Image (cartoon, rainbow, N blue to C red):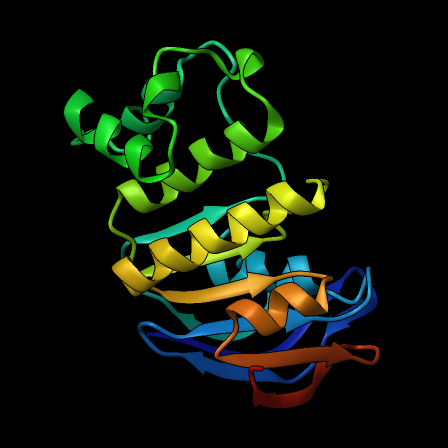
Length: 202
């Protein structure tokens, strides 16, 4: 369970987030929509525990993983090593299994520069799910992919979430992505941003 109770978030004298309160249950996918600059990424950083300078409280499970807009892979490490370094208890066999789940076990010994962007995104997904997350944060993980690749990644993410059932918070600009993945949609609006709509998914 992720529980978010934000009273305020400011940058200097500029208010960014106002009263933002919601919960995400295990197995639920809550999507956050809103225009660029509204505070979606700020909200995710607070939920992830990266930004602790806010008024309010957030509770989150111990095993939380995050998939960023960019794959964030170490360029001097292979695909498999990018998993085992993040998860010290993960064996080579475990890394291979995680990469097989995303369809790129044959790329395990390649470096990020030898992979396409879509393949790098698959490694990032494998890294997130290799830790058996209780909570998952997705920050526009399908951005800048062509439509066919983005659709493949959406289907893969759906499958992985269905298997692991983490409490998932997903930020996107794309309504179609939100409708496809979400159990529930939150829309941020205003300045400071608050939840304008708290409704069901598609």
